[in-house]
Length: 367
Image 1 (cartoon, rainbow, N blue to C red):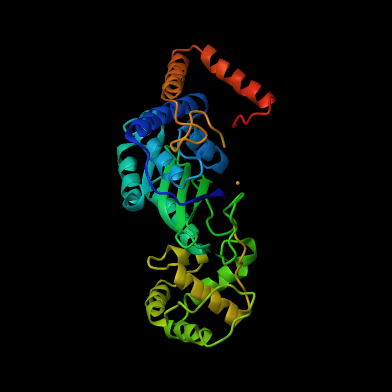
Image 2 (image 1 turned 90 degrees about the vertical axis):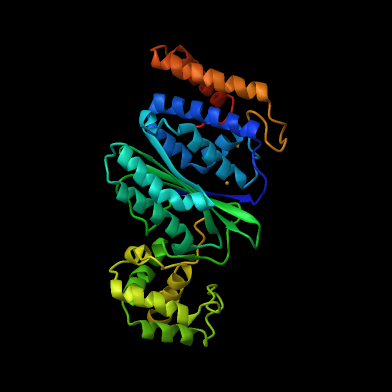
């Protein structure tokens, strides 16, 4: 399931080295604690919660309202578990920009190095399809540029990925959580919230778009020349005013090459259409529009798309990062995990009592 989204303004800059080093150490201590208490699957469950992830980034001391919280927090986590994946049973692949494109190779390397319950190819497929759904099947104006894939030895996986809309200077973060078996194309989102719902959206994974999905798969097997002819015809029509999907930027000549590829593959389902390399937002949009024009099955235009401070923030909000308190937090967590390993549960119980007290006082004790 895709468990939620979060919106944030696009910000530049980066975490200073002294802060990032602490973020790595604190991330490592937090992950060790969660794994020791609940196992690696709990790490995935928490990362897939947009509220928890935002609070996590704030606890690490990053700027709370910056798009950089996503990339920096994920980068710190990846560095924190590096070299200890086998011990923790937690694996992280991908990242920002060019690093995200190395996700398949990194997953494959972990699969070779460690004994996984499912083939690495299935995890690579899950990584690729989660990105393609948010970039192609859900066209909300955000281009994915960060993709981080988290998984366990048992085959459970989670995704934290982020897209940018340069026109509005906003970013949107997408969270996924799933097990070895998962459907990608019909309401894969348990709950999706965003502070900025978009108005011009193509949503082909909505429940009400089932007929459009089926018809799109059928059309993908039609002769390419027929589809190209229909695209040209659409560009000469005036579509209903309520329909916000534009065809003016579709190029029939370019689309025909993709239609030839789908025709050769003869996909039986919409998910198989998405699997085809080269099938991107424009070709999917064209097929969806043809489905409406010829068969009267409109796709959904419904947008499938709201913290905490412990150590301050990178930009001084609500106060500059307190390095002494930060280092003390890392030390306490590491001592707690070590004591738990040795059979001393007193420190763990103390943290539980503190969480329960905070909850009673109206605080937000996460999980």
